[in-house]
Figure 1 (cartoon, one colour):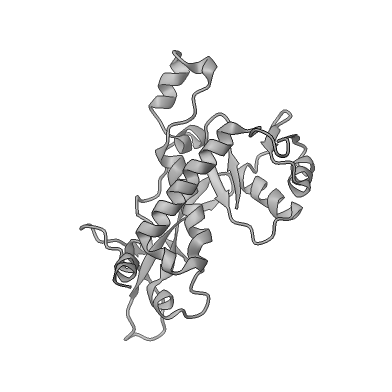
Figure 2: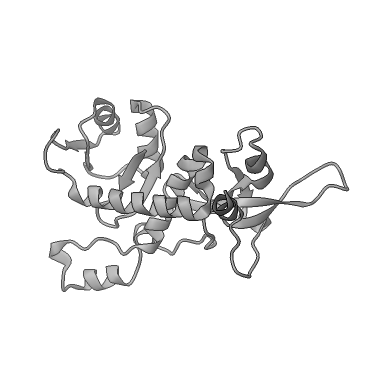
Length: 238
């Protein structure tokens, strides 16, 4: 998993990569920050050749870590450990861990919820200043984008129902699904599209059951009562 973190706001997103190539890493950088900065951008990271090439291809300045030495980017290391704990907790609590191939989607979910729930990091120079007070009164996503995350607050693995279009007039208009997160566009933009696993496909391991479907939030129904986690119940009974 490639993780990106903005130093000032602390916003943190995860990018599961099947292949760790220069092109894939560059694409993840452009998704995280598609707007070309006006001045040189220093990008801290590891000293892998493909990462360094991706950074340079964007005109950024690489600041790599030293191999087998104390973490060069300790703030990112700490946040990565926090994200990993969130991922593990949500993955197990949702019941999705009984379908290991869904792990990449859970990794993306954990990055988003980390960003919308944690305070931005406070630099030593900001302590005791209005900047510290402002950061303690907001979250990382809001600090980075200028507004609160507009998506609905739905847990990973929660039962939901999504609209389906069928030519069969007798077929159900909505099917049960498992909430898998929000689709984030380049530049941390959420355009009202969620990600949902087909409950039927998961249970029967049909097709690419580990790949979520994109569903407009307006076509997603979630019960207002206590959240239901069908896969967690299946996992507990196993």
